[in-house]
Length: 94
Ligand code: SF4
Image (cartoon, rainbow, N blue to C red):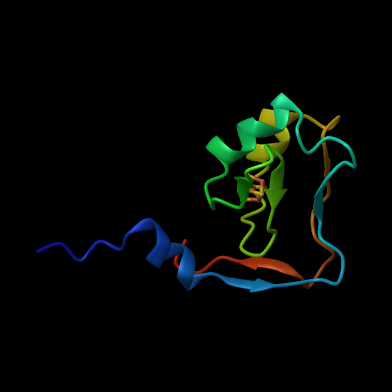
């Protein structure tokens, strides 16, 4: 029997301090842009989803601040900033 934690259990160890304003947003009108759909596939925390209307939605809680979505989709569709100091992710065990 393995004592290795799965991905969701590992992510559950981290602490996330929210801020009033999300540090990543989808630019208005870009919700159906094909470039944005890459984020659904590459976000390691699974924060992007595509709804039945074909629009990509982002739930920022749990963001690892890895920048993968910014690299995959580009700044024409995403407004990406690091969180304000004192907010955002605090990594545990790693
Ligand atoms: S920065 Fe990383 S964890 Fe945060 S939304 Fe983008 S891909 Fe997901």
